[in-house]
Image 1 (cartoon, rainbow, N blue to C red):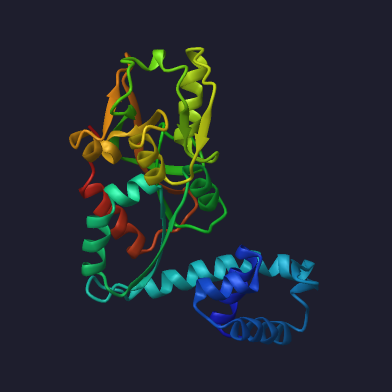
Image 2: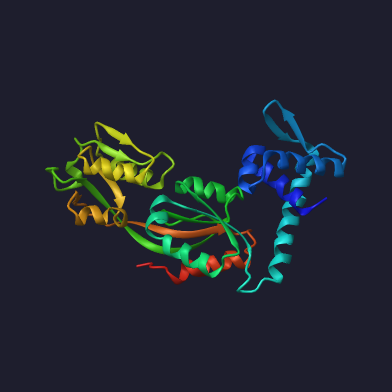
Length: 290
């Protein structure tokens, strides 16, 4: 039995799919199948039940998975012992929200890659709620979310930056305060987005009941919709600063200062390799907590 077979086994379980495991590990599907077959032959027991196109762990597979998690952590620690700054290697699985990815991470990732070219980085851009779910499921190592301050006893959280939220409307809108925008179409982000939930709670608290709403999963689509006069939205200031300066949209007054926080998070039980720690260091050296 080889370590790569255990790595393949864990990936298949985590993704619940041979195909997705192959994509994540950059193997052919035939290689994934071969690794699992070799592992089953070596152990002399079936690890998966094949139910048509679905797979399910057997009792043997469930028991093995616990030991494989421990084995791969120990293997990573052993590899980390001999790593030095110049030859640092490993895998870094990062996730971040769209706004943070576009406006905060580019320079940091570029400098990290230049400093540690041997580290393989996989990146996922998603809504904050899904990012935290993936963190808890062990599918990501570190996430950077943009939302209210996190209060999760299972996560270690470091604040990266403070981000102001602003209401924006088309440049021809006629009202000055958000409280006067009840007749306007409200433009929301996706249902798993922390910003959408915050926006909806804000409206409910002030008994603002919009007659119409639109929903987009892309922040860029929301910005362009507002610029085209389709409605009103709540956005991080950093994402609309250029549009405001170009006078393509107008800011709508709000008596309350609304803030979100970019936060670096990882699971409290997650063993951090040197590659993980160096990335967190890069983030913290660049932080702006306001």
